[in-house]
Image 1 (tube, rainbow, N blue to C red):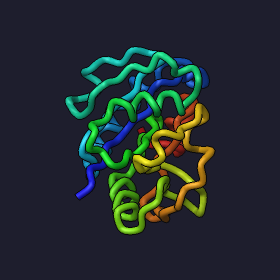
Image 2: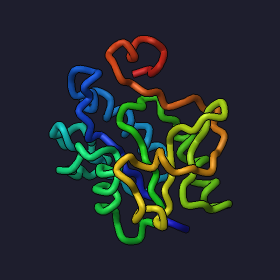
Image 3: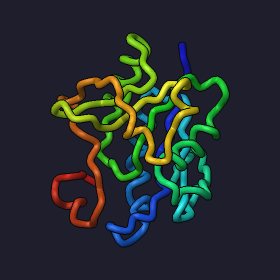
Amino acid sequence: MSRVAAVVLAAGAASRFGSPKQRLLLPRVLERLAASPVDEIVVVEGAYRLCNSLLQGRARLVHCGEWKRGPGASLRCGLAALAEDAEAAIVIMADGPDLSPEAVARVIASWRAEGGDVVAASYGGARGHPLLAARAAWRHVPDAGLRVVEPRLVACDDLGAPGDVDTPDDLGSGTAGA
């Protein structure tokens, strides 16, 4: 069976949050990702150094010196660190603490059954995370990231969106259940 890795993007400056939100949210994201069918997990740091203890032994840490160029630069760093036999990568945002392991499994299963270079979960018809990038898409990641690429969507409405914590208020607003 094809190996699927995960790249967790945790390189941003978290300027709207006001402090390194990655340090707060990453353990929960990794816990949920560890319950999914990925074979390897890489976390990409950039603006802030992250402690290996945050990884809970579940992931490898990669530093991206070019993180300021955009999420695509961070994603390229993470993809380059994956094992050579990884055929696809699930892309996860470190600020989505309500990530459903079932959504990860559903997107992977859909890719294995139907293919596609970029496959993403959708909620209410809107593109969301997790997003899967097949190896063929790895060499064409722009600095803006894969959000500029049109994915094949996989409905995950019944699983709940992963959340998106941008400000401290998002932690208590029902946007994310950290």
